[in-house]
Length: 372
Image 1 (spheres, rainbow, N blue to C red):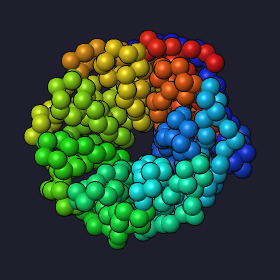
Image 2: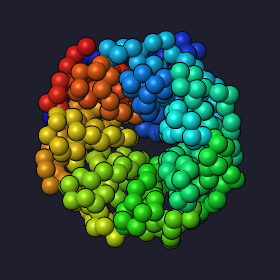
Image 3: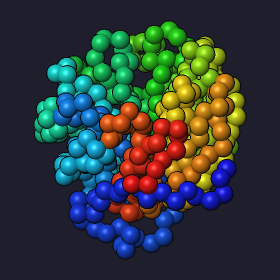
């Protein structure tokens, strides 16, 4: 691990005017828990059809989704704010009504709902629709779970100890949820872990020091969960083929252990522990991509109390090099990888929760990032 943060002057987009408060002056010192207000989760997609990656994020207080349209040079146009439910957390994108425009689904942990924002293709959205899903919904993922060619949603409900599946009708609406019991579900990711063509789930079990695998049956239901132990309070889990064997693996951020763990899939739906890698203070979320163009998956993690993002370049065979941290603003929660300035090189966008900002770190192409 690099002991000193690389000094990176990142371009910063202020969200203070949208949130109605200057977080850095109104809040006490950050503490290691996930319910602080402000910018939280982040996704990148082309919302206006111009071929440039835009951004959408949840702003937990006052409870909205913010859409930032890419100007094409690494900068963004004036933000669009859309009110959703209470305390929105994670969000996903997909085409829920088959019109070829990008739509958004967001879990609202305070109101127990999922809000659907159907895109118009110009960066704006139709009036929201909301659906009940469970108590304190948190993680959310999108896939076709029942093999009918329509996108569905799965949501982890923390206080209900359940997973809700909202089956899509193909017109942007969803059916009442199908419920699967699971203790302490937190973050959820999807993949096909046993190669049967049906969508499976990987879920972190908050406070149980484990993650669970639920193999899909192809009809919107799942086999009994298989749990895998972790060190201490995992936050997020991410799917990628880390060792290039054609089988999906997992990267799990183990927040209170200050590390991330790589688990190799065996193609049957089972996983084995490979290695763990130290990170900064209270890591929370990660993104996976090829940051240096060598064909190997790299990992970027956010460290909440270190106020940094940490880049771990792939070393081949599923191994990672020691992390290199880059300073961002206060209490980062989420990160995405995209080429924001159209130079063919991956960049990073990071939500800074208590700063009320987003940091953009422009990539050089070798896995490092330059000052803005």
